Length: 196
Image (cartoon, rainbow, N blue to C red; front, side, top):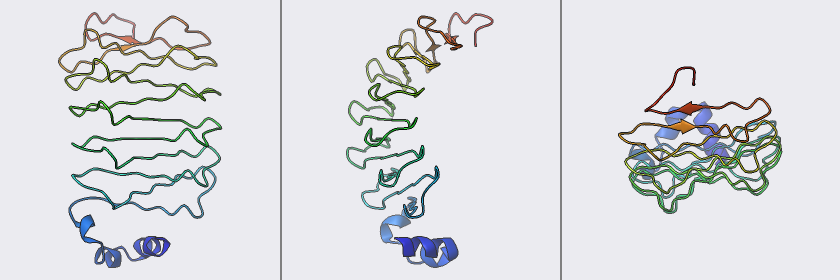
């Protein structure tokens, strides 16, 4: 892979002439060698295997990940209908790294589900929960649990209630808001002046 990558960097037209057939149907394949990756650099691997229907696969090896680097895993399993699945392993996650989990289960109608586990969340990390429940008509629901929220963390609640016609409602609960935390309430209906 390193040889292919180096050729791509130096002679892109040469590599294009030798791309595998699976890469010739409009799909994009990224490979960034994990070698020589340090000091907050990011590693992206997009496997050309099991890539179909314009789906994108990102794999960032958890190996050699340190110094606040981010690990993304996008599983090719259970990926259909253009849905996107992100998995960021909680293993080896420390030093303020972020954990994203998007379950492929209960994903329909192009909806996106983000789950950031509150487990192992410390040192000002952010916890996002997007419930797959009550998600319809392409609406997006963000829930950030107020539980285990401390040290200036932000709490966002997006209520699925009264959400229609693609409107977006953000509610940031004033409860448990302290230490210079911000309160956002944006109701698509009943929006009041002075609220962000």
